[in-house]
Image (cartoon, rainbow, N blue to C red):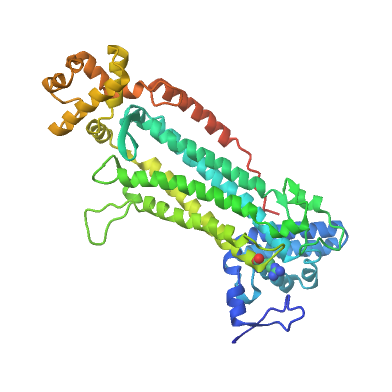
Length: 482
Ligand code: ARG
């Protein structure tokens, strides 16, 4: 066992303060939770104010503490705050530095408080802030999607809609973009729900049983802008479901993002050639000069596994964990901070790609033509205009498609003679070409929520209302200034 040579005198307590190297290396969380410095400092400010209120600190001591905390915040922001792994975490770093700066008053700050309720309040504040930030960023992504979906071009482009990645039915591009819009719009709700779970104030719970001081938790609640006070001190220091809800929101967003990314990757291929991505959002190959790789879409797809893993990581950590605080919980920081960072980048990348992508309408249309996407419409026309029973119509159109495939042609190009050879119903040009028109096919989807022009216009109106509601949402992100 090698001694780290460093002492943590701050909470040496019954031990002599010597810490083994492995205890330092394995035990530190400062390399991650330095990112919670604003939350940690703001929580301490509230605690000091509360202690003054109940007479534990004098006004002068409280003022000295607040001034010291302000200095520490400035030092961290100036990159002038050395991290010392033997001091383990952000809480200890701040308290240690505070005492260096202001002396005796600094030593009083930890009265009626434990790092267990401190770390809980830090992550609650962080989840509230991060949910507001990512929720607002997804709102921006939805703005971009709606903007693209309302352009004349995307309303006019008709492209293949797929099932089983086989051409299914013609759809308007605007409709396709809006399909993603609605999924992302629900993701905003999921972040709002995570923020809501994090709206219980854990501070004041002490190590786990409460504290021997008549603390004013209502004051803390108001000062830190929480909706409620956590009603049970044990639950308050042991639970991490505010983080789980946040990780779940990140995971579902990323899952949606991975589906859009997969489409961008496919559509950007030479085989599809439905889109071009802006040069600035792609990369070249070090060996193959022709390459323009959709890396941001691929990375988003890849990071989805990572973010999903973070959710499973914390779920597994918490499973069967006895009440209350256990050191295992320190591992929550990795999942929380990593998913926050990765999801934030994915939102930014996707917004940039959706804003800059160029759509190739002719290519989309050509692909549609080759895929017999109007086959169902032709069968429906036989039913409605020629009174053919649907099963028989299905059969006749199937035979015609087979004919086209054998001749290497499309429904709109097959010769009149070949058509008539399959069925005399198909000999009538006027009837036939109306039935296999791609635009007509899309516009026949008149049902609410369908791709037909009128239904689409209605959907765009609905999307605009949703947009207004999302933009007006009150996030109640905590105010970390003091
Ligand atoms: N560094 C710890 C964490 O991040 C702080 C709480 C430590 N509590 C304790 N009883 N050792 O979770």
